[in-house]
Image 1 (cartoon, one colour):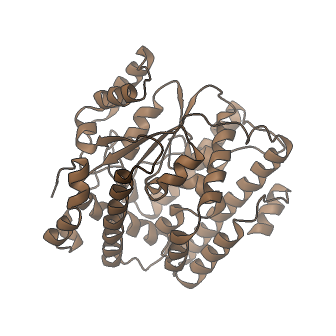
Image 2: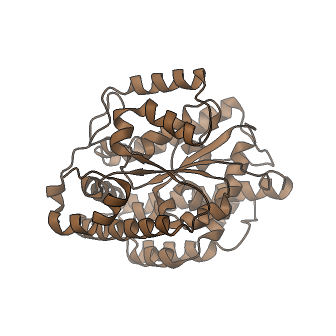
Length: 393
């Protein structure tokens, strides 16, 4: 893959060599554990090679123009929270502010054109957006139900997992493939080099639109809040909250679907057990960390129920907490965005639970998980009490 990426781009320098170990561990797990079928194997190779090619072009730019990656990323807005707890919906609302800059999917995969150029022309950007759209369409055609689970598009804001993926240490891969050895390695590895790459990519993306706040999101930040603040000391962090037992079935279903795109062996029951245990441990850890006072910044909390009941009011509260203005232009954009939703965000749709107009809901029930409600409700009681999270099942 590295040789093919070099041939395709005509470039040699991959930058720092920290990525070598996670790439090797991931590739080995794909061979030994993921049980890829032929289309899955072809997709996996293509996905990894795209990242390697983008990495080569970025390093070329950074070597020629070091002032770009070294530029400060000032006071970014960072959305985190459990998957399906409103993170995507909130990210979209924040991205509607003309003063904000949210990285789009195509920009994360094809960040710079190469040749030492930092920016795409408008025509080139349209072509790259269409390319990313075709990649998403292929996923939808492989498993048509996928489009009801998560809204995707080359021109839509998306998660930081695609930034981390350039260091090959990302929840992107644990979501796409069954790679337990890689997942175990990643959970104990120091992610500082991945966050440094994240910062350098954001600095590159902000170069074409100086003066605008970067707005990003990823549930995976929950596991690295201290490192997040170390990377962005002045970050404005917002955390969404929702009943984990309401969304566990949807999360497991989404992961099983992604695994099925690449393999004939997707174990829903095992995914449910693994994910529920992981969410419970994660929420305990977040609760302890937030109560310890060890984080240098104040995190603003947003309940999913409040967000979907009053999206614009939730944004006004957030901006008031950050001492930012909701300008007339932003308010008009918010009103257009909310009106475009043909129904109030509820059980289905993307990770924000907000279905776009014309897109079917992703229906799921806790009963389908096979988990014991009373047992797992007790394990989440401290988290729900700490953040005022209502039980939805």
